Image 1 (cartoon, one colour):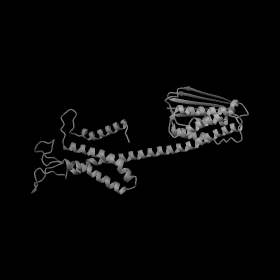
Image 2 (cartoon, helix red, strand yellow):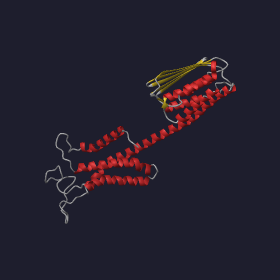
Image 3 (cartoon, rainbow, N blue to C red):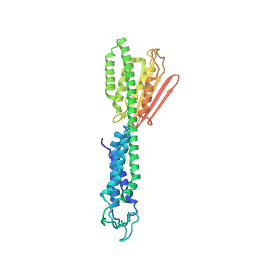
Image 4 (cartoon, rainbow, N blue to C red):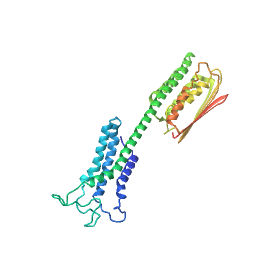
Length: 357
């Protein structure tokens, strides 16, 4: 998996600060004076590098392999072993020598590292660790705890985000499965009405239906589709309704703005349009439907008006289609959509505003 450049820069800056901070806050460090890099500074630098390696090993391997699979004992043993390695390895690699430590005048005594007592067989410059190793363990313990808990928290956060995205994708897939048959069934009913009337418009209606089905089966699996294709789908649906209704309905459909280079979630507009035809059309009286689509560079506005008519007894009003599209809008455009629905005794209006299309 490739990391974006921004993520690489953030990680790099954080690790540079983590590595240099102990050196900068050291009493021996000076921005303006001379500063000699000694073994303690190199040991701190090596410890920091080892902790950075441990962070990624813990994040990408130890936590998923042992912690998340509830192999806690092995995870704890690996963690302890890594800490001991990080704390002791730099001191083993760069041991402090017996004699006069740096930063002290010749002949001075070091409180933390006193010169050894004369013992038989002891060499005058023999390396020792009884002071260095405990000091390295103590000084690295807090930094190691920070790295340890930070890697766990970030991994838990990553898994939570992944789980939420999978849940969102599952819900959207389920809603799409509910929406698609809803449109197809209503369209088939329209063609069935034409067939009963033995209308010459039936072949044209079947072609429109095939175009609708082609879009539904090939495009709606994507999270976002070109707005041009969604508008073509809507146009085909409205033309199919014009064929079915003939002169019994006044249908006004207008598009304002540029639809090229725009994206939209599939099938979030059509349920409102389909609802207008479902509840605003009666072949026995004059029906009126007005649909307006206004596209700006960062906003889309869908306005729908339909006159209320007497409904056939067979028309179900359970509102499944609108309920589904409400849920999809909340999932896909949670903070960037405004839906306004107004109803009076004579008409019904809907206005949907989608931002950041």
